[in-house]
Image 1 (cartoon, rainbow, N blue to C red):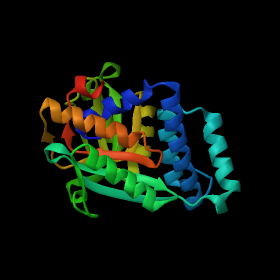
Image 2: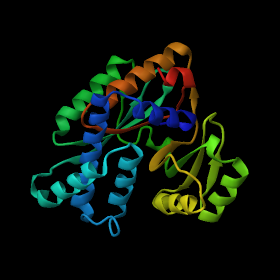
Image 3: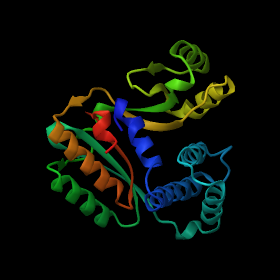
Image 4: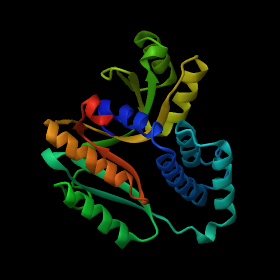
Length: 247
């Protein structure tokens, strides 16, 4: 998610009900399956799988579930037919939104995503209509209560990170090259810094401010998209107030 609101979205997911958590695990299981199909079951030689495993652990997915998903994908590659799809468009207030999905039925997923855009006052556009506003980066979050900015900055620079954002009240965000996010994470953890999450993400160049009503609409839209089984990731450039984002 965008800038300072990204952490609160992760935090919200971690606090959801068992049913909602199971939905997150199902989606991550789908990502694990696709990663295994593309590069094999060994995370040491499959960097995409290694990133998805890290994401699974950050979301408190049990190790048994992770191992089972990898084993199942390894033995049933022929039955896995998910396609990676990306949808772009605008939400209220000119918010740029990118939706990434893994689907076994492109027509169904495209129709579902378009319906959600329309329902919440947005419009789905053509490929490339908003993606030029985002850059692929690694994003690592570290709780502010666990370290100070100077210590983290020195460790991050030594680890090869590109930048540090301290705008959020609760976490620091360390930005890296997308391909280096796991290496930087390991270096930070080796330096004694506790990492809350680390993943490859789409980070917007600029952000848009919304009024309270627009923020509420965008949050409802994001929730509706996340409830769709095929949707894996949602990126946007809206500034969401923390109290709004946690509702």
